[in-house]
Amino acid sequence: MKKELEPRPNIQQAVPFFRVANVTESVRFYVDGLGGEVLHHWTVDNKLRWCWIKLGDAALMLQQQPQVDGDYGQLNETRGAGVSISFQCRDALALYRVFRERGLNPRRPFVGNGMWITSLADPDGYQLEFESFTDVAEDTLFDDELSE
Image (cartoon, rainbow, N blue to C red; front, side, top):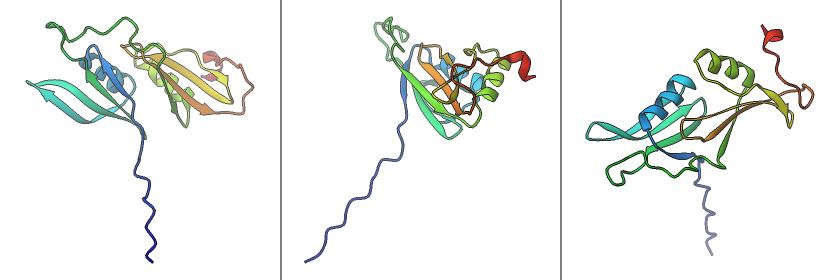
């Protein structure tokens, strides 16, 4: 009797998919602000509607909210509510500095759960957290002036 082969796991990664009010504005935030790269995209009538953005070893997808009554931007008032993505990084403090240099307003880093954590919201209110492990004491706040 032939032994049946066990199926190999086919799942490779989970990629957050955000429906956004203005895909052009969101791409600008993720590419110019966070340093991402658009790897794949879909356009309709020469207008971007969907894209896959690479952020280091992570990725996410953005799609223009479908048109409703002639308006693409009508999302409900709670878009982004309750959604956060935690990006595990080599150095969250370095990203905090880069984001500030690019004109973004990330939250002042603090230590929680043994990690430096800084965060910011994208244009649609999705909360993005950037974390890196540390031996620094819990609840320590990052001091910009001492780090120069």
